[in-house]
Amino acid sequence: MVSFLRWDSWLPWTCVFFTGLYLLGYWVVFARRWPRGAVDRFKAASCCMSIVHCTSTSMAAGIYMLNLFYTDKQEMSWSPTPSSHNSSAMNTAYFLVDLVHYLLFVPNQPLSVLHLVFTSSYMLSCRFYTGHAAFSTIVLFVVGESTSFLQDVWTISLLTHSAKPFNLLNVPFLIIFSIFRGVLTPWATWQLCLYFLFSRQASAVVPFPLALYWMWSVFMGISGSLYWVRNRKSCELQLPKHSCKQIYRRSTRSSGGAGSTHRFLHVRKINP
Image 1 (cartoon, one colour):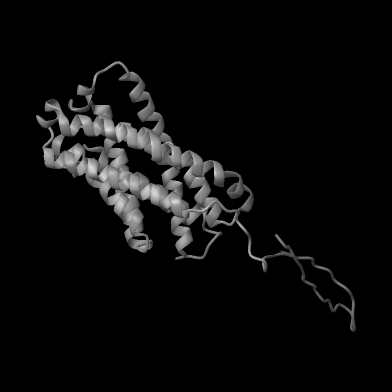
Image 2 (image 1 turned 30 degrees about the horizontal axis):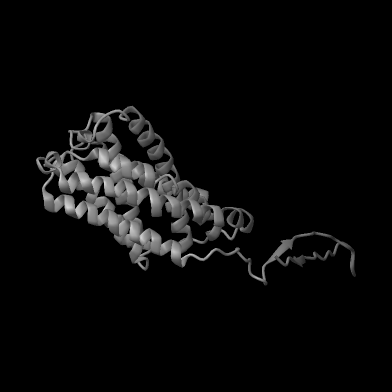
């Protein structure tokens, strides 16, 4: 078993990197939007971290898949290259940091916590226990992370009550998310099941109980995604009726004695 605490590994450094992105989102990007300690501020900071991760991961995984387009399925069990090692460490670091975020600040979302636990254990065992199956994680990232950018923008719009971008993305995002998580991901998972559970090449390097756990974890992740979509009704974001826009106008007038001034604050209510 390879130790993930070695300083020549990318994992500790990428954990520091994603933690820095999280803190940047919390202390800088959304510092003026919510007060310190607000749950929505933590969620928005997590979205900042996710945007960087999903964009880089999807591009890298797509390029890697294109390079291996003509290789056979045995590539799934070969020992990964140094570049795939680094990519795996980067993805693992993101999920670990996001898991800590949910455990500390959003513990009332067990569906997201379980999803991150399953994903993190899958990747940790691939990278640091068997040393194989990196190709399977890349396949899942291509079909799983392709919708994350839209989801992050959609979530930030919901958290910040930005009605225009939310209503623009709501229906298209849910449709695209359903196609990727409900059609493409199950198809890719079935192909991985055929290989890991029913081929001798995979059983020679990956223990059957571990392969069974991997496939079960992916199945649970798909089920959770479909459950989330089912309960996410397509609706328009409505701003609160009591929302108002304050317009400050300073005016002075002489009243009474010389030099006395009165300042007026004009407030105009805006109905959404």
